[in-house]
Image (spheres, rainbow, N blue to C red):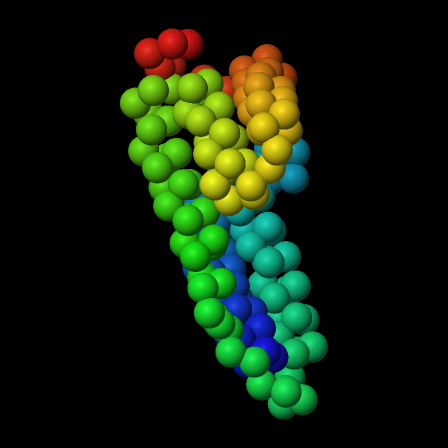
Length: 148
């Protein structure tokens, strides 16, 4: 399993370097007036550092080699990726509120297989909570949909 952990860490280092370069090109600004590249650069630097430390920690051989994807273990991650892709498509069409509610509903039913009471409560409270956080606290304009 260490082999796959090293591959994942190397991939994150690669992504971090790309993000750091992009952040650097955007410009830092000053400490009192950070530019658009300030946070992306430093966050990607943290990602590179943590991934490198993890990579170093995974050096050596595996005591017992394990296959990464056995049986049908790949089905849930693939379904999760599909649900997130559909959410990204639908958020612009039906709006944030409706798409987020359907995301919670679908995720909890298909992927997590939760009880119906949990599905209903988390879907309603989670959607309202995220809507409140983004619109009231952060003042982020969200896509309007057919209902909201």
